Amino acid sequence: MSDDHPQRWNVYENVVTGATPNPLMTDPDELDEAFARGANRVLEGTVQLARVLIGAHQSAAAIVVQGDWTSVRKFFSLSEKYAEWKNYRVAATGYGLHGWLLREPQTLRLTQGELEAHPQWRNFGTEAGHHPPLRGWLATPIQGQDGTVWGLLQLSDKMEGDFDAADTAHLEQLAEVVSTALDALWAVRNLQKAAQGAESMSEVEPDC
Image (cartoon, rainbow, N blue to C red):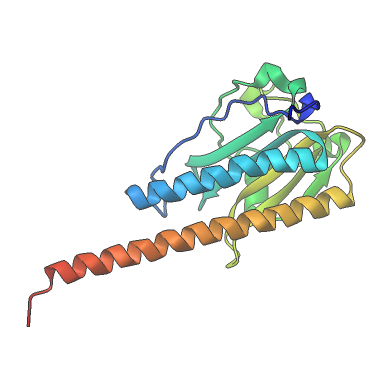
């Protein structure tokens, strides 16, 4: 069945990356690659679902491990309205509101006027005029069960009106589902690492 709602299509061409060295995976192996593939599937599906569910022209998800922006994992979904930016590629650096919200985790819902008046707003710094323009902003942390803040789930440019309390509740619920999925993938990775380590130890232990 064809989709007769073109604004639901994601025109952005996400670049999928494998496991990259970060504070928790200093020397990625195949188990880390498997985790990265799973995380990629979760994040890519999430940005599309968030945008269509709430009705926005832009959505983004970014995972930043312990503040290490060199290994950031990010995905976008843009409607046809932002086709001009379908190949936009700039490394995230944690500048302005994005970095601040990871340090001070909270849900933030701002109109365009409130966004531009926020003390942490930097208008993308040197990328001003190049980055897709924001039109209002709704963002919430992706936070693990142990309180670790892994990243952000964001929306901008609602298709009708401004983001409201119902939108906020939906995004927070989605972020919780994403956190649970990522926690589960990470737990599986850690169990497999432990099993791998135990097997290696048994191979080198001398017979009694």
